[in-house]
Image 1 (cartoon, rainbow, N blue to C red):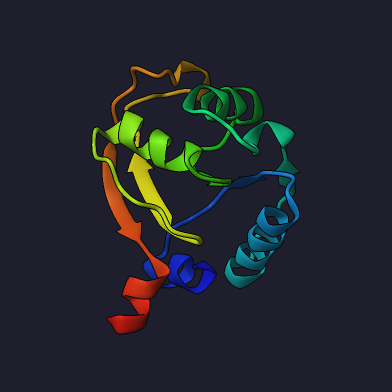
Image 2: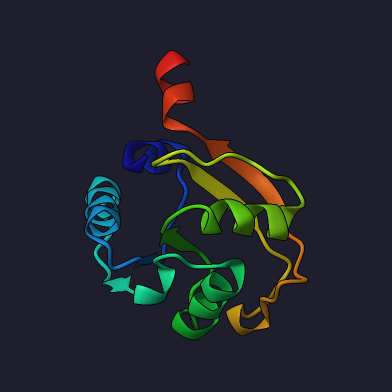
Length: 129
């Protein structure tokens, strides 16, 4: 997925990850692949997180960036994509969803915010493409 981010020229200004080992390793692998030099913020709230929990992490951790990458767990991330876009999507391990949000500040992000699903990539679909 890191190579995909680089190939698609998707910029990442901040990476926020669950503090679970597998999530941390995934976040670091993506950071290495895209040449990300910033800090990876670890947040225990992302483990077993609900949509409300994930939104709280984004509101509290993100201030002066326009793009953030969340590395977390299901079902929370699938629920987040469905809530923000109205499009329920399956997110297998290492899937990547890009969502455009109509907000100026992360602190304005709520459960009623409606964004647009810009891209969705699943590892197995990339292998066959």
